[in-house]
Length: 278
Image (cartoon, rainbow, N blue to C red):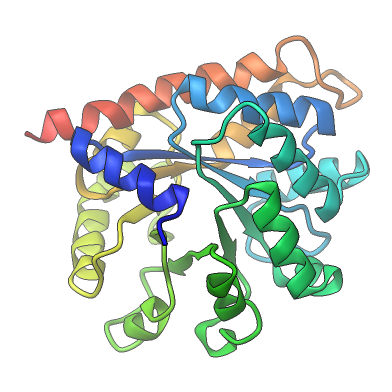
């Protein structure tokens, strides 16, 4: 079974370039604007879109993404509405892979089987659930695979060679490498460390490896794209949303274009990567 994610990476491999993966929070700053932002991403250069599922206790998120989740919840966003948003996106776009990213609790409350059936029929391709370790695969990972969804796992600098096989065991779609060594701002200098980490993961798997970590500029996106199969940008896009809002925190005429313009600039960086490497 080939998912949209598999198909997209195969297509990019033929083109000889890395994927540009964007993350935005569902319902931020309000449901209608959020859907317009997601619809604008592929045209701006996003190859794969990760959509955050807002949650009240997002322990692994930085302050920007936490704030985005709270704006979305305040605007009445729910998991059910997030799936409706996916359905809305799919009316005009049947090709761009969509990945839902977040925590297990809202899915557990929704009901795993019902969630997987609804997600699949809405047009979701994969899941990244940050608080479910491989030891809990029976909870969601295995049922998700059975439902035809990719279950994408996170690896970090602390995932050593002994732990890596467990992390990769039931992973599909791609591996998400979270580079959290060093401080944001020293990111460009860290491209070498990321390259070494990606090479190490690739010794254990044939899956594409995408890297997300403090990528805010086209230059960093290009540096990451040279060693990885994809660069993931989230916080910078969420900050672009926040920076476009009015004093009351509402969307303005600039909100969608603020995100789309940044995505276009970052996409150029990623797309220049493999050519530069050759």
